[in-house]
Length: 463
Ligand code: SF4
Ligand code: SF4
Image 1: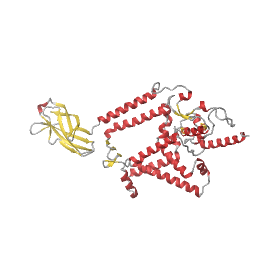
Image 2: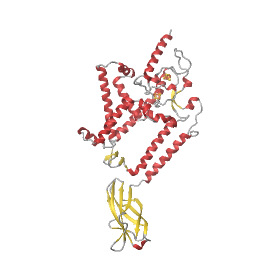
Image 3: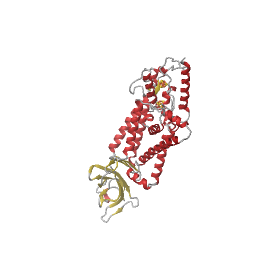
Image 4: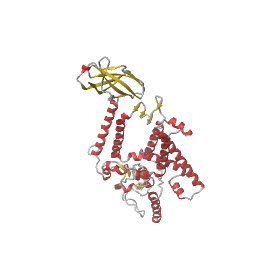
């Protein structure tokens, strides 16, 4: 007479699953396993980098700093200027192409393991579990009427969430305003309007997104979940349920009917987005692998091989042989090719990058004039940009016409990371060329560094 009991348990379990799937807040059951370990490893790595990098020093300044006021981006020994926008563009394209490649290979790996939304939700859920208890305790607490214990637990949880959100906001703004100065300014309220805005905005954003919105961000706000399917092909390995092995699952009447799935529902209970992976690939799935961890534990318990839920491709699940490498995978080959091309372009751009930039502007107010000693003179303004982090002296020479010279001082000192505008007069004999606009070139050398040399084309007007 086991059946009625099983039936009752089955119904209770169904009711509980409905609660997890559709009603109110999702209280995911905690799970351990290799994907959960990897997920937490990513939380640690990303947060050590994010919270730590803003505290690093390099040559007496913050190592990583977006100095918007002075239009510079410091990255350890590298200082990028607005003129280096191409490098930043290449870095963004590289990141996007890398994301597409990883998605074509293994689905939404970024979403499940490295996306800030996932990472902060994991941290906030960990705090919630430590304060309020496991998934069933939290469910009970949600349904319990207000009392002093509930108030206390909620206050502690929200206090800790706010503390994490505040520190996250300070760290974020600390990449734009030196973090030591920022921290010193907070107690006295000596912050600028933008700092106040971003501290409040980013702190609130973290608190709301990770504490309340959670999976709704992935499902309804993030555009990536909607178009990720475009990058998939039949060999993309995503977290999948092996229906050929699992079905037919245990019947509703409790009878076993051949498949390995015992319909325990734990894979649904651990899912942070509240879906059932057994329903197939769904846009809500962030590929975190927690259902695979849960099912592996169940399979081990019932002495079946693990991997009923695993990273597998459509072909693999259909029992079709999967080709290795890039053969027969044009999408993957295209992303890999693009990634290689942009890596090469990035390396080349860094190699070609000069720490000296010069703009030459000819004074159009007076085209040319004759000096007391009979030479023809043209006036110019040179904007010398010393992109190095050291003071340097630059020597200016001019060529392109016989006898053409710079009149007066031709060497100029320049501060580290500065732009210096200098007025120059250039003179040439009247007979040095035919009348009209003649091409000439300015050559600017760094005296301390023979390799730094810039040649800028310009024109000289002969009457
Ligand atoms: S955890 Fe595994 S056995 Fe349990 S319902 Fe999910 S797929 Fe079936
Ligand atoms: S279905 Fe599995 S992999 Fe997808 S979000 Fe839920 S737990 Fe993560």
